[in-house]
Length: 205
Image 1 (cartoon, rainbow, N blue to C red):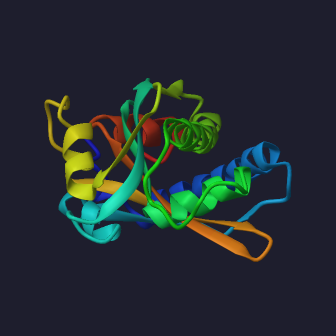
Image 2 (tube, rainbow, N blue to C red):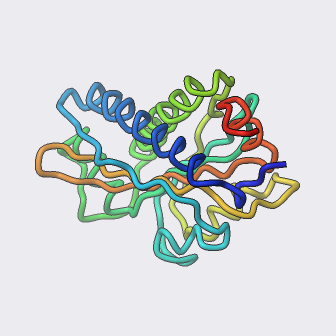
């Protein structure tokens, strides 16, 4: 079985290309929502040890705004979209200029909006991955949480009966005019899923 920690450079190049295409699709989707031009910076795609995921967003105790999905289909896994509360507020402000960026509490409507944004962006990445692999993959209804990064990751993975060694880290920047909002995706595949994905891509001999 090809585990994620056995990835070769060629395989990571494929994932980076998928990340670039997914970023373009996500920018288009976000621009449609905002009704204004949106660019996305070239995403950074790398693998990180599972225990270092929280460190990538400031540490276990860092408060983050997170949208969580279970990826179902032929290559199941888990996906998280995380931002600082400040970044989440900035993103909401682009939708509604009456949103206050001074207070970091979130109304029910703001939680729902962030969940929908995360759902659309994650769907863009999964769609790109599905187009490349011809595999069926789709996100479940998203969940939103404002909590410590370590607590969110633990909760999101509670139902997994197995452990993951590493995750794929996709660092994305949304650019609207002079404004920049940064968010991170973490795709944590089930142990067998990467074998399925790379076999579909023809990357496995």
